[in-house]
Amino acid sequence: MQNAAMENLFSQIIQELGEDVTREGLVDTPKRAAAAFRYLNSGYHMDLDKVLNNAIFEADTEDMVIVKDIELYSLCEHHLLPFIGKCHVAYLPRGKVVGLSKIARIVEMYARRLQIQERLTKQIATALQTAVDPKGVAVVIEAKHLCMMMRGVEKQNSVMTTSSMLGLFRKEISTRSEFLNLISR
Image 1 (tube, rainbow, N blue to C red):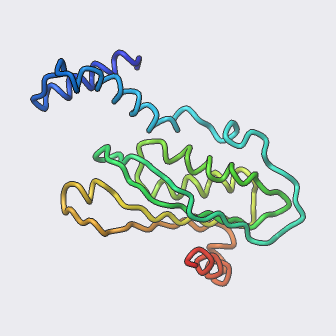
Image 2: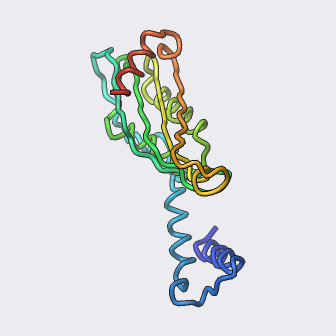
Image 3: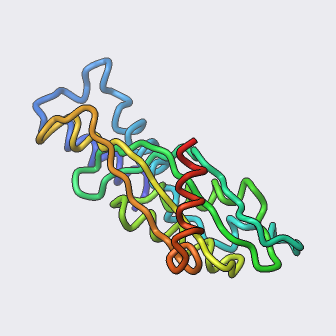
């Protein structure tokens, strides 16, 4: 869909709300809203190989690698409202590690799509598993959903937590416990 088509659709939505799109404050709103919506969903134009950009390196380590508190912003596919939170990612290398920033970029790639948190969590874990074939991957996301805060039940302090555990994180409770303990500090 071209920018003009999306701008026209936003203009129609604003008019359906009962607003005058020729009003000073709204004249450029359809253009800005289309640009913002494209940016918020830019993950559809990314793929794992481009995100990784060959930043996978041989490494003689088997110790757990954790990146915690990665900020994430996504749109709920049910109401098109944001959910905002943090993602914690860990993996157990098997001869290869991935560049640190690439973990955050993987989170970003999947978060910048219309999502549900459960699928997002699994997609991040699966992508990291695919990228470096580690002994295990763990992903935990904690997020607040504006579709639950601004409408519906209007619960301001609720936080949704999801996890995906692959490999040794699923099989070994001690490995899973170590990860969960380290991210809760």
